[in-house]
Length: 67
Image 1 (cartoon, rainbow, N blue to C red):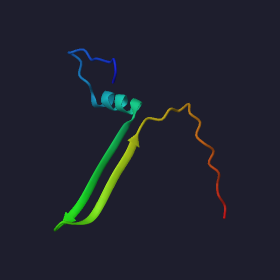
Image 2 (cartoon, helix red, strand yellow):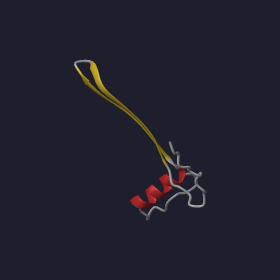
Image 3 (tube, rainbow, N blue to C red):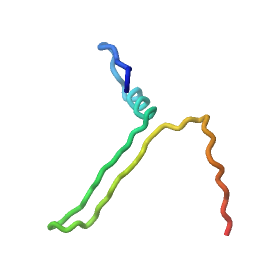
Image 4 (tube, one colour):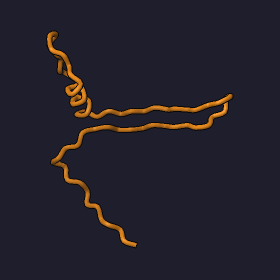
């Protein structure tokens, strides 16, 4: 959010915040480990990129693969 300052009397709504975040993209990362008695039972690594999509960008052609 460079160069966009809000006036002091204006509140930032959730929709405005999401619009600004998605315009630039958001990267989420996280790690979750379920451990009992110092033994790792389950480990989940999260890596996600959330971004808006421009409708003017043409999607790649998807070809059906037949066996």
